[in-house]
Length: 109
Image (tube, rainbow, N blue to C red):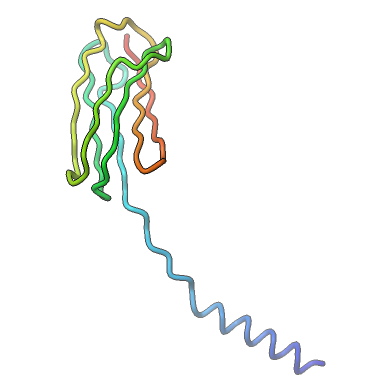
């Protein structure tokens, strides 16, 4: 019986020497600046995976006030947004890519 335990323990240790191979996910960066602001907002997207995506901005009432579709192939994109016609409050930048949703909140003073 002790040989069985020794065998199981050795096989457990042997399997620890072979870590699983995990590929890192491509980075996606969504930056909104300046935050807070009373004027123009710049939204910068770095898309290392080069996938297509849709960027939307929602106002304080939850209505989409900006929408931009970006085809795949471009790793960096910047968008300017003028919030002055939409009043003040908390806005949300929503990026949809490959079934995933990324959000950033920003304040308009």
